[in-house]
Length: 85
Image 1 (cartoon, rainbow, N blue to C red):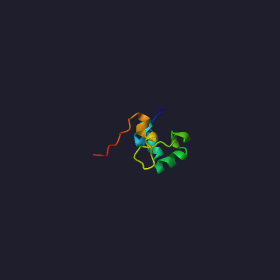
Image 2 (image 1 turned 135 degrees about the vertical axis):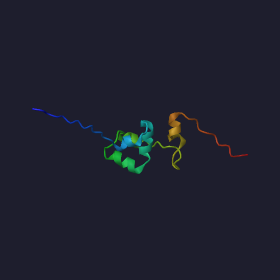
Image 3 (image 1 turned 60 degrees about the vertical axis):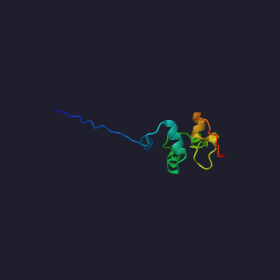
Image 4 (image 1 turned 60 degrees about the horizontal axis):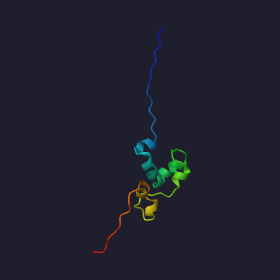
């Protein structure tokens, strides 16, 4: 009796891997994008609820203080504005 075994590689891909972002940037991207955040709230996400609601922002948003910005978390000094010339 001759038997054949057919192996078919199966690749699974999630929307998280399709973003191709480091975890830290993934956190900021998901938190500040309504559609991605909805995916996470459905349970299809590596980030927990506390991370999604910690208030961190990129820094360009109108309601984002420097203290809550990505730059502050990464230790980038705040620029001093000098508008008087």
